[in-house]
Image (cartoon, rainbow, N blue to C red; front, top):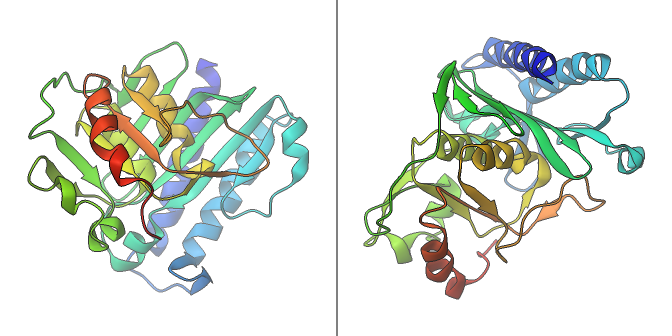
Length: 262
């Protein structure tokens, strides 16, 4: 597994290099659906990841935001779950808060995760039963016990819709793009928590769930249930990610507000 992790890191960074060739340059943008853009950079990174990861582990299935879903993945014991460019809107706006997210799932649970922000050159990685690292340095979730004043990374679009207004006088809310990037930041202690009460896809969260869990934190859905990956329906209700110490207080604080408006 260590050899596979090393190769996955190399491949993920290569995808990041491809993305940076487009960043703040010229590229085409399409709308897959309202407020859901995709660019040449998304597709180029997806192509590289698909080619190199499937060669490295040919028996594994494939699930990616930018690849047409193939139902045969559901019969595979191992599956790559990938978002080649999470935070496309930030990428388009020139905000350096986007990431490549790569996870390997075994029997529904992530066993390896790599998240790379090529604009800031932040590399987060780990595997099941081992440690979590940022740029080669050992990392873990924060040790904060006090809920009031905790630092929470929040979605730019959700803040714009007012989803975090109920918590602004209680917590330090910091706007950060890319779900995968936010989860990675929780895992290595750059913030205390992050959550979204709006729907996400498995590829948004899979690598981050592995990193947070191995770093000593918690990452669950809005019903406080653990995630199971490689399901026929890839949508999840949302996520709650934290250092573990703040978990129960976060659950009790945000549960009365229910799911977010979409």
